[in-house]
Image 1 (cartoon, one colour):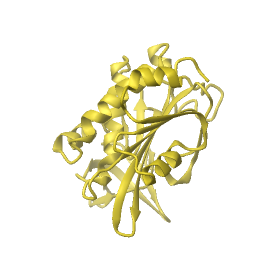
Image 2 (image 1 turned 180 degrees about the vertical axis):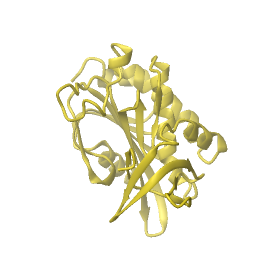
Image 3 (image 1 turned 30 degrees about the horizontal axis):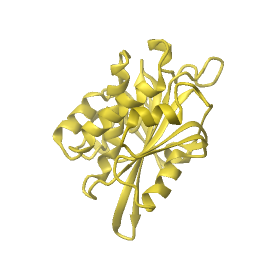
Amino acid sequence: MSADLTAARLQAALGERAFRYYDQVGSTNDLAHDWLLAGAQSGGVIIADEQVSGRGRMGRGWYAPPGTALMLSMVLHPGSDVVGRVNLLGGVAVCEALEALGARDVGLKWPNDVWLQRRKVCGVLAEAHWQADRLIGAILGMGINVRVDFAGTPFADTAISLETVTGPVDRLTLLTHLLARLDHWRAPLASDALFEAWRARLQMIGDPVAIKVLHETISGIAAGVTPDGALLVRQSDGSLRAVAAGDLALGGH
């Protein structure tokens, strides 16, 4: 257990908010899903010091050693008409929380990465859960690199930790900033304000991109986004194509 994130400190800081804290978990999203099915209220959070089998988009694994990251999943109960915006909520809230601690050059890479100095500092994974055609809720998972050491790894040029630019960070302080911004934005989930805040932070608009979608790769210039979060790609023939989801690489290849 790391001294900056303990059950006692969390209880004192979070007050009446429902939360569950674990020294080690497989996946905070999986635990949050189980909690959702058991009747968890909106805003409840699962928090972990170490995550051994977390996952990102497209089923990728993600391991965070103890004491190195802030890992949490929030239970939400959005309407079925706005559940697709939960990912936007996570991206904007993380950006604002990092800036509250002094980080600069914070932005977003579509669809779900938070960038710090154009390197990944956080991944956001939103999952809607349905029973037949009824939405029972959504889980918003976030993993922020606080003091992960990427030196000498294949990710040294593409990933970064918050403390690299801010100096020492108390993860509980980061958590309280993040929860405040999540609470601020989760009420107006359908608002133009949230969409505009998210769109304004997309740092790859105007860049050449290639997006792998199933067995197809869509290449062109990232030209903008639609209100439901799809990326607009201007292809070589001048046409615009909306891409709802995919694996994006910069540089067009």
